[in-house]
Amino acid sequence: MRSFLVALTLVVSHVLLQGQHWTQPRTPWGDPDLQGYWPSVGMLGVPLERPADLADKATLTDEEFAQLPAQRRLRNANDAFFGESRDHWRDYGKPQRQTSLIVDPPNGRFPPLTPDGARRTKAIPNEARGPMNGPENASPAARCVSRGAFGSMLPIGNSSGNQIIQAPGVVVIRNEMIHEARVVHVDGRPHVGTRIVGYMGDSRGWWDGNTLVVETTNFNDTGGVNRAFSAEARMTERFTRINDRTLRYQVTVDDPRTWTKPWTAAFPLEQDPSFYLFEFACHEGNYWSMRSMLGGARLEEK
Image (cartoon, rainbow, N blue to C red; front, top):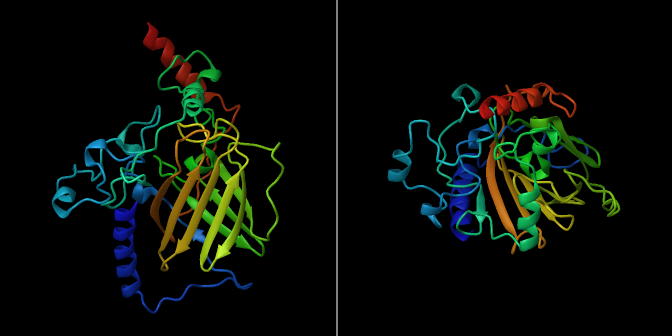
């Protein structure tokens, strides 16, 4: 993670020097103002996990950057989701030198799963690997249930919008994909009881200077993206606005039941005043996609 943080510090320093007269705006009640639309589509060409042959290289050199494919993205990009593979679904934004969204461990890849984590991860339904005989074979995301608190912040395909709304004592984080909305209380109240669990968990926040820190617990045993967060998982996010257009996002997941050690992802989000969230008319019980997937499976069998 050290090499990535050094690179990130240089980038942030450059940004701050360019906008050295910029002052963190405040809400009328005095909190740092993080409100606005912060789509993650610009990071769509950066894979969640770094290609293994790049090892500990957190950013690309000028030569490596110039050799990227024409669409300016690394292979294994974090946009491979079932049923929507055509390029017209994709807007990769500007080229990025960052080689993975995961920045720690230093190799930019998830740490090894524990035996229990491997068992639970394997048990998560996945429509891409089959079989595809009914709704129970589809993932929570494909069934329009949830991508989980972590997955909802990741760039993906055609709905990478994020919005932050603030009111006294509360911050709301809206995600366009699967129409999620986390209500984060920042008034000091404790988490809900451990018997209440869910895909998005339970979020509580506080201010560390100009940084919003959000701690999420109370996950069920299937939340996450292709990995199963356990009920013991603790996800800590940091939202730091570094100028009018840039929000630095960092998330650390500590889940000893699932992974052998904690891991961290980090990437910038750029505000787009022209952006807004489209209705994501996808919900459990909306069967059109499910009928198409099951019908496609039957055709493949023929």
